[in-house]
Image (cartoon, rainbow over all chains, first blue to last red):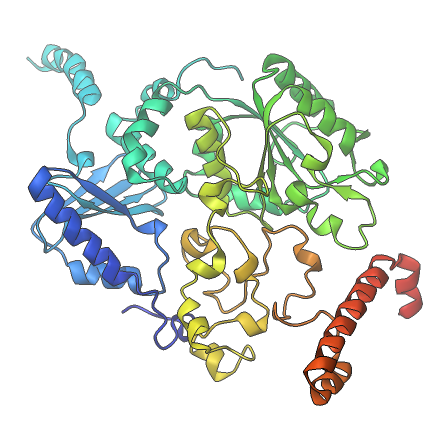
Length: 133
Length: 363
């Protein structure tokens, strides 16, 4: 656990929220497999003692997929050691964390190309062709 | 000033992709303390939202609320000001000065009459309006005038919401809150000394998204941010349950991170988002830093008997009288309790009549 302040961390200053979150992930993963329904958990909405967020990240670990998105600041998308359980972290252009989410899904929607963006790309491609072909 | 484009159109014009927009919506939902399942609805609403004109008036205040907002990182103040809202008038932040400021205010009010959001920080002196004026106009007159064309009013900070520090006994300026004066407009109270920056921006984003004021509690605060009790959400709560308290700021209990109730923490009676949203980019919050909650989002928090007095303690020293009561048995104890209440009421009365002259005599 990463704790630099003894007074803040205390001896056993845990909210006890790590286990419920892991249980929620388990139920959500079962739901994803059975019904295809995705779940997103907003980690900022949960009371966390110093070190508990790191504990969750450490327990889930880093799996096979890591992606970085550059859109209004960077976002990192990591699949955990548990398939279908993703940690999504959004940052602003100053690299400050805006939000942290655990997504239980086949692929986080932020990774998918968006229709509006693809339309824009389709409009831009003729210019590319005209300039280079 | 006037811009009829929707928010989505403005973002696209700036080269923001749909993916970036969805990221904005996801973090906005988190900021508004809404379920992630609401993101598609927020995206749909924001797609067609038009940025509202915002007029910000500062009265009897310390500028702490503006300081708090300008350090908001979610979204950045630049994004908030230029993309989401049109901040047409702000005494402290606007570059203009003198008559140009008054013109900007009048222009924004006329152009957006009935549609603008009026943000107020600071209380309003009604005892003697001359205590605080802007361009020779009293705060009271300026508030009444600006409120006429407002779609809604947001009282930012405890001073605007409940009177705050200027209202503290003996309230020398006759400070009043916005809702004490304006009775015919929807008012959202965003108290705190100062409020958490993302709560200020979150309330604005919520209004922008849904086009109406959010659900409020009995003190006029948005439930999304003030619906939770600090004590209930505090990570030190398990120590309270076990009776493990810090007795001083440097004892073993303090070092071990035990509950700060006995050091005056007002968490049990305070409703705010500090325990989860935290401060300084989510780094920490007062209790995590080793200091009890001051209860700054509650009315009259300056007059709650002292920041370092436990909530369970009487507000005056009654050790001798109470000691007699305890020694003489339960019946007399009840009598001492009544005496305590009488003495407390007397102390409160005396405190309210303190004048500057009295203070000078005592010095």
